[in-house]
Image 1 (cartoon, rainbow, N blue to C red):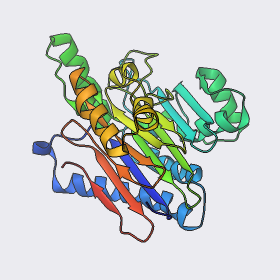
Image 2 (cartoon, rainbow, N blue to C red; image 1 turned 135 degrees about the horizontal axis):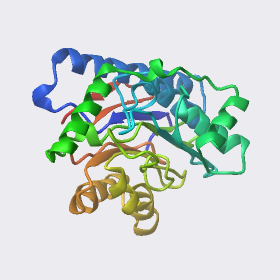
Image 3 (cartoon, rainbow, N blue to C red; image 1 turned 180 degrees about the vertical axis):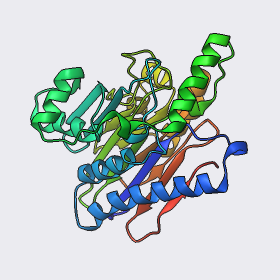
Length: 309
């Protein structure tokens, strides 16, 4: 058990295959993770709340074009962007989420507005964007969200779909950013943001904004942010399943998360991973695929980042 703060982040389980990862690319990804960790850590060092920490960390990740959220969001099959995000406060179990939105620089900040300024949990489309405008959140032109890498990936995916040669490359199917934190007061929080799947159908929503699937927080047990095959994570209600194993079966965070990711998900073709923190400040980051962009820091310790094993 620790009485200090702890923070973990992820940049998605859709890593570049190890054989294709250059030293320069990996260094850039680790640097981006470190910047996001620093943004979240600065909040906690100053005595701030876990909720503010995960907001800052995920917002920083949304500004990084290397990850599939915000500026780096992938394209739908219609060559548009549709982004999802969620946030949850473990102290009160308040939650906010948005789905299918475009043009907003930081979807996670809008999810927080939904949580704090409305009576709702999830909002979509124009209603969500109107709320963002009323709250004064930043919008960007389409050019801000364009990256050549994402565009090329869309063209390749569409070609493979037409040819019947589409493979299971996780870098095309996965891609999310997230953060979980415990502050000095013992409060937990989780936040997740994503651009979804490359060449997804317009209107598709994955697990990231679904409370209990891709995002969850409860001070009594844990906070979780997931990344991977969204449909499988929704069907297995992954985040809540880990919470339930801790609460009702008395399992440790490590045992609960390991079983859900390596057994439940793996048995149902659910590829991906998650980051989690419990009420005692223990952190785990299991995944059942090639890798997961991830990092962590705890009070008095050094930052750690990783991509593969």
